Length: 296
Image (cartoon, rainbow, N blue to C red; front, side):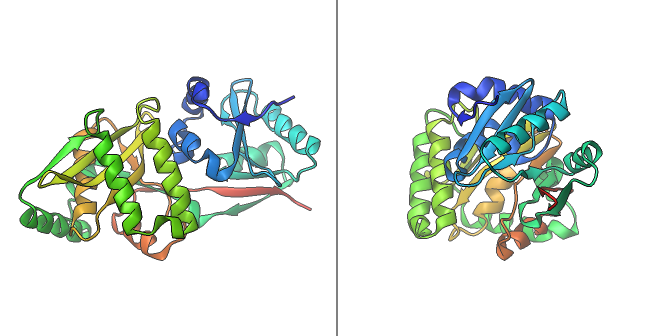
């Protein structure tokens, strides 16, 4: 019988091993993402024979596609037993494309599958983000040129114990300027960012910041989901400083991510402006996600 519990920092080691075995490039396959958003989505987890099983929700459970490797049929059976015990319908979220294939092979015709375009992650070639080469990225280069022209006294720094408080202070200021606590989605994000700063070094996050005239005006951080993919969890900049966003993006990729092939900049949440911005960087891969439920 599965024993689900709220995720804690004590779960980091075994959960990370399951994620490594899963070898998925999605942003949910990082401990930092799972932990920092667990309160927002009421996530509980349970170990099961080489897998991490997770469920989200309080009145109705939705199960995450099993993370790990081993006896897949047994893992799905354990989830099904938990759903029956709690008198819940059997439904899954964040199922990757190869997961759809596996589930259909194990249970032909039993489930219906629905792609969730708003939840697709955008994966870019690291080299493309670092160089911004080519005609399609000309506009990004122009934004950075204007940033450099208007802000000659700038510098990039990795986030360390010496400067993390300044990055957090900038995050608080950004939230005030953008009325975070008047919008449900921004409020949840603010709580996740706060959790990340509180556990930054325990989660082994990697990040950077930009200064202009000594003041922090942008920061970003993330963690790897696979050996070849780094996930950017958070990126914030003061929008009144032209080019600050493309500048922190490029500098972080150039300075910190040379060992990775891909940079996952997560999904667009279905927001039209965010989708245009992410598409404008010319993604190399769209990491697909599906919602899966039993046919009635």
